[in-house]
Length: 117
Image 1 (cartoon, rainbow, N blue to C red):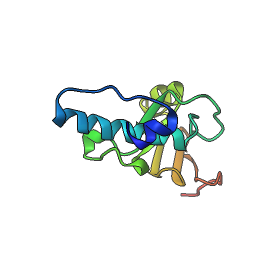
Image 2 (cartoon, one colour; image 1 turned 120 degrees about the vertical axis):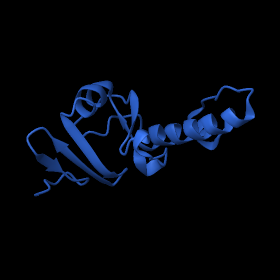
Image 3 (cartoon, rainbow, N blue to C red; image 1 turned 60 degrees about the vertical axis):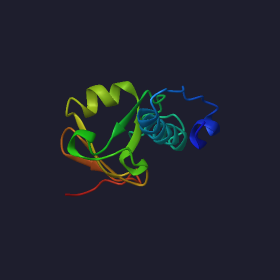
Image 4 (tube, helix red, strand yellow; image 1 turned 45 degrees about the vertical axis):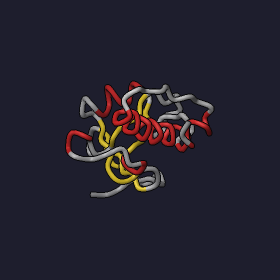
């Protein structure tokens, strides 16, 4: 059991292929750490819904990884309809250097202040 899984009381299933199990265990460890860090809540400013998804700030398809600073927790609505339908955008490093951009070029920094561009 990984440290993050132990902290959350979650068991990670055993996988028989040793090459694959190490990769999955590391990925799950990073995901569980982020859920724990973000207190299972959506990180969009003003949202208090439970986190249902973990989002990669820089997409894995673009060569980024599961580093904790590249992951943040979002509710399903903000992840699917906000981020992936280009209604909102997040950049920076989680959890304290995030910059959010919403629809009409309004931007908020990590401390809740409006970022002028």
